[in-house]
Amino acid sequence: MEVYFQLIEEPEKLREACERLSGEKFLGFDTETSELDPRDGVLRLVQLSNGRDTIVVDLFKFAKYGDIKEINELEPLRKLLEAKRPVKIAHNAKFDAKWVGHHLGVDVGGTFDTMIASQLISAGDQDRRHSLADVASFFLGTEVDKAEQISDWTADTLSGSQIEYAAKDAAIVVPLRQKLAERLKADGLERVAEIEFDCVTPIARMELNGFYIDQECWREQLSKVKVEQETIAFELQEMLSAGVAQASLFGAAQINLDSQAQVSDALRNLGVPIPDSTRAWQLQPLAKDYPVIGKLLEYRGVAKALTSFGENILDFVDPRTGRIHADFRQIGAPTGRFSCSRPNLQQIPHGPEYRRCFRAEEGNTLIVADYSQIELRILAEFSGDEKFIEAFRSGQDFHASAAAQVFGVPVSDVTPDQRSFAKRLNFGVVYGIGAQRLATITGFSEREAENVLRRYFATYRGLDEWLRAAGERAVTERAGRTAAGRLARFRFDEDDRGQIASTKRNGKNMPIQGTSADILKRALALLHDAIKGSSAMLVNIVHDEIVVECSEAEAEITSKRLKDSMTAAAEEFIKRVPIDVDVSVSKEWSR
DNA sequence: GTGAAGGGCCAC
DNA sequence: AAACGTGGCCCTTCAC
Image 1 (spheres, chains in turn blue, red, orange):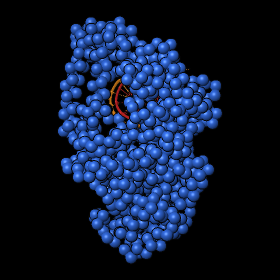
Image 2 (image 1 turned 135 degrees about the horizontal axis):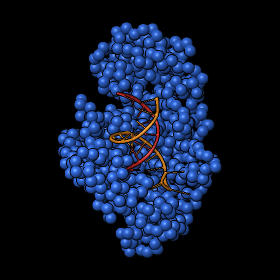
Image 3 (image 1 turned 45 degrees about the vertical axis):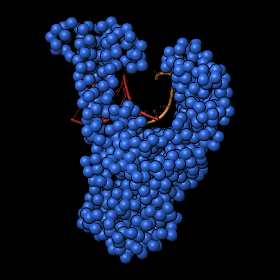
Image 4 (image 1 turned 180 degrees about the vertical axis):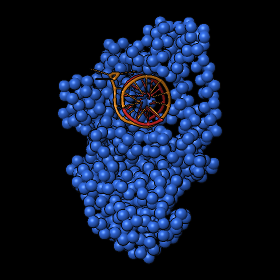
């Protein structure tokens, strides 16, 4: 592909070019950078293209290694990037949005992300790749050469081929967007694509913001667990080697407590009837007869705390900001949920001893908001079940209210056991729970569990019907859809009953879990607009929860903006069931 | 030494 | 496959 491009090295040319391109509906957008993380490197080039006319802005010509944030001559570029129109087309737009966000101080206005579009179209197909080269080859049949991607973008003078490569990447996404847009439309994915695109910039900003962690607090917690761990490990070692006389005699053959194989052997030597797996849920029932099992579970708990949530979390703190800047994958799961890594801020233990270490910086406060039972409300909306909806509308404790309806007693007479049971059942239903599993988590016999499930679905006939239909649809249509239209295709072997059953459960769960993701993402876009220009910044999201940090002075207004954004987002999809958002203002991420 | 697989467990 | 869904991270084990 031959590309006409203009290298821009002076303010006047930049002003002219931005003026010229500002009337376009769409512009290809790309950046070339010296590193992968914007805090580590320099932003060298910004490219914009309408497909025929491409500009390559050399930022070194405006302020070499300097702070380009303050350079006035770049204002036309900032304006163009910030504007909702033209829409900026980029592949993995979060990357470029972070770089211009950090170095130019702008939030990219409208975006069309060709990577996300490709992910939505592939609908969870694990075999499809989503690099620019893969997507361009799949949708345009053109080859993209990435040879220059790793070249030195900090050289005084860039080579002709470097600049041409840079220009091509911005130009190619223009025809690519055309093809992807057609497919999005044909597949009914326009609405969900809009939601996804609109939360790219909020997520880019969130990653730049990072989440402040009090390192002292974290270390203190760790040292407590360390002390515990040493005692527990010693005791467990003693108990396990009791079965191997010579081991304790010579003190030599220490058992590796982290090795399932060695621990299982030792347990067998002690005469413990261990099941095929030594997972906690299987061992738990043995704990009352065999103290060693209780000790093992105790050990596992502290070991997990020390490894997954130990010193290593602090390795991710950026010394320049004192904050953790994790990586969020916008379509982390086929359901549309985010995933998070390095570190995974979505799996920090719920206990206050951990969460209180994540806090607001001096002078600031955290606003923590989460949807109350959002997945059950989505299920209520989908099923249209009047009784289930009424349990939400009544405004009473939902699980107690459900227990009352299932057991046929007044809410005031619901026992704690009944409530707890209804709660487990309510959660399980969202995953397509069966009697066997229900029995194991409640301690009921399978027979009793079956009866209660029958009673539950007799009470909520609409739920039963919707869930059955969703399961059947998953098998016949080999796909599921969320309220915003997100699509997940299911692959299974028709001769495998297990796979069919699994597909049915997926068909029940995906629309629910996925709609929850749709709602959260929509809320992020609304929130981003609502807090613009204020002290508030997004710092974390956990599936149905949003954490914002703001100045103490703006705590109240930020709480309102957060709650309103989340409520409005949910109400776009949930019409018949009330939405409840719990908001708390606190210095710490624990309540 | 490196990487994949398996087991286990944290979150929602 | 925990016959309950979605992730990521850590450890051991085993193959290369």
